[in-house]
Image 1: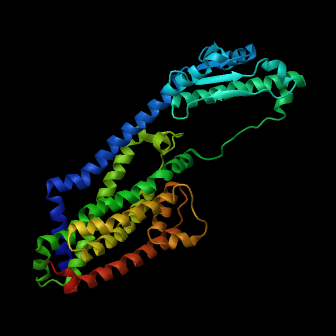
Image 2: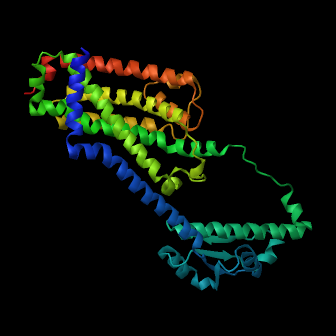
Length: 395
């Protein structure tokens, strides 16, 4: 039995590894592509942030009190370009904001400062929500108005301390490595899940449905090897391919981190990464279990389909469901151990806990057991499909 399964396993792996184009597409291209794309995206995001910080806001005002300009200079110096306009120019300036030539327009009520002692005079702020510079400049203007408001209140109450009432001191007790774990665990579990499924899907549709379409599966089924051995051999080979492809993608993500950390939330130093060998092994174990589940799903669909096109049609909605499940763990995590018993979902939660240094052996074993049971049931169904002449016929 072992020799037969190993023979099928070796045959399928040779088919992938000895095909240079396929091996490059499955093992090298994912990591290389991700490293390049994520580095470029991280660089572009950083550049956008730098551009916003270096941009000098262009602010036009109508009926501007001198106190506003004095406050703006005290807060931002000469970085904020303030222009004085008349009410007759409001529509023209609004058009310039729409075109991106002006960032903000402030329209104060006449005698703004004088009216403060009599009531609540209004100031209207015009910005363009689809222009990044306009949005960031709007925040800066809000800051100036807030400082001006506090200054006026301080004048009424006699001191600036009277306006503050109390102060708040902030102290973060989280360890540096925990901050890194929190940032990476937001996105990486979802990425690993997608990489695993995509890696298995790329080869999985061809491994059975493709051979049906070419007619080669019939020849294999006529050999003295048990059909169950053929099915298990194909599954194990696909699991190895899927895991190897995912590890390649993971390497690409790690290589891109110095340039793409803003995509993971930023706010941490790469030097704070402190994952050990045990963390990596736990991660690989959870990934391997998840790979078995994905392979079982894909192989069963591939066995039931008549050709690659039909298999692709069946797998596409499953892929979407997997993506939704993986994305659901990005911002929330249900309380209670029951969630770790849900196949695939529990593996994703464990991967997140490993990255956040919160992993427990109990939850890890629960998720592994549930996933193995789930994969075993699907594998049994696939074996039954291999013994069905109606399902395995090639014409």
